[in-house]
Length: 109
Length: 132
Image (cartoon, rainbow over the protein chains, first blue to last red):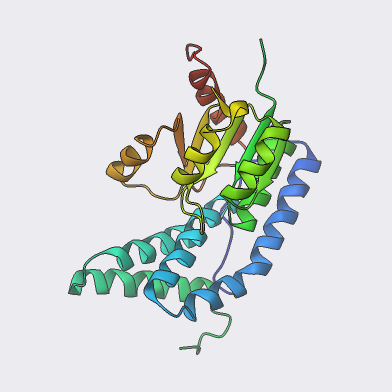
């Protein structure tokens, strides 16, 4: 996915087999991101969208994608705040970050 | 005196269950049982006999706090430390979670390489032992 790069992950002291196992898990997580993103974009309500963003926020960082997790968390938090120009801007900013990281087609609206 | 060996993980997100199993099992060497919801946890706990439970907060059907209440009714769960796993990060939200009676909480995302050690103080605390 263009724009999505993992952070460096500390493997100091871990056997090669452990590193390989983690990298396989990370590949599986990345393979599932298009569906997660589709679920977020296609959510039928803010409540459903919030739940999907919250789940992504909880998972992404553990796989080494801190920027993705932070953007998902920011978007999820903005959805729970009272409507205001500031919160709308915060959501839009987080949403743009998510698009940059997850959209495979940059022209996708 | 028993040691921390068996960990029951209750988490509805499949990717997080996978990384929990990797972290606690492959890295930490614990015996791990992961389930996707509170009702499964209540069914599995009597046979698995966990030494510690990691419990997601936001889950469909039974929430983390509701699951905690249900688990505490099981004789096998008396005295077993339960640690909430949560993506919430605001201090007041975290304080509210502890009011439900969990031994502690771990904020997601967690570091899968350090989680096996991070949970030990909660196990010591929950078992009534002084934390080093």
